[in-house]
Image (tube, rainbow, N blue to C red):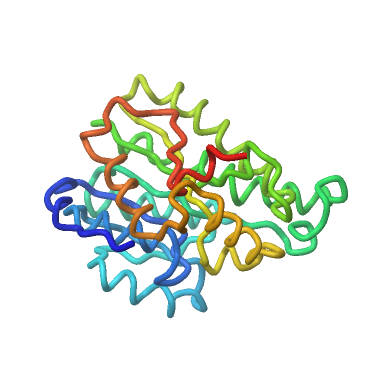
Length: 262
């Protein structure tokens, strides 16, 4: 389903946002970046490394990103440099999107009970604690309030075949959303998570038997279809806007209703 961006025009005018986790033009973060820009936001965009840059640059150019910065979230100096660049450019930040997750393949494709200590720790660090580190760095730039967004999945609360160790990891991410919302709320900073249904993205392709997840969502969701990245982006734009100032600590499902069926 296509989204008409015209009703969003001006919704985020004057706001500055950071978008992390764009892998290519088909990624969830790319869909969000397009809708943020259509709503009038100025954007900073990150890329993982030089190899990823070729896939991210076209999206950054499409959305007119003012900053295109390298970011490996396992490198504290690189993360700090991103927020320093934003401070130098705008002096503030109104919202950010954290759309980053990783688990070593051998742990992702195995049973949770067989996951290695290092693999589990890596998945938690990259997929969860990086969001907490971003929140800490964003806080002083959000002196007028703001919104932090991350991306979760239904496997956080229900056992989904082949999602494996990412289930506990996403559960930790959603718990972090709630605690950050409570801690940062007095500063006017809201914290929410998007929970899209399965999407054919580069990141999702690493999940074993992913086509089975896609078919289950398509056939069993009340909407009887998959959602697309533009629909996720539209919800993201609404959540970071001033129309959602009363929404924090929330998990926003964008899955055609799949999460309500057994």
